[in-house]
Length: 109
Image (cartoon, rainbow, N blue to C red; front, top):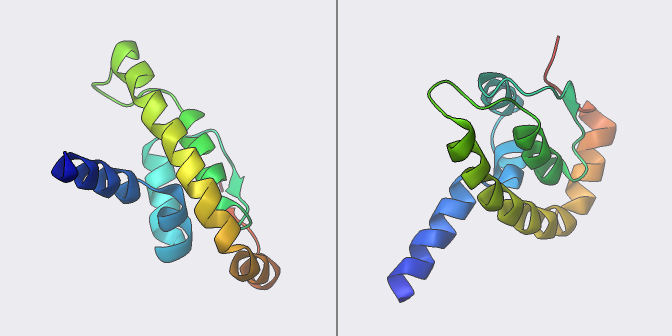
């Protein structure tokens, strides 16, 4: 049971929107969203993890992914929204500073 919880936590953090937008470079986040063909044009740095997750939901299913697989992934993204929301709230002072200094992460150009 303990191993399963640790595995679930590791999987959630691997796809965590906050880690994708705050810890990794802007280019990595943009590349990831472009690969998913999101319709989002920019991701503000304030609550960027939550926005990143919603951008992932606001994209067509990828190649080789049928509608059933796409709909089954949605609960995991929604769980990540909650985790990202908590992390984004803790990082709010830093992300407010980054928003003022660097602006939003531009996806579509």
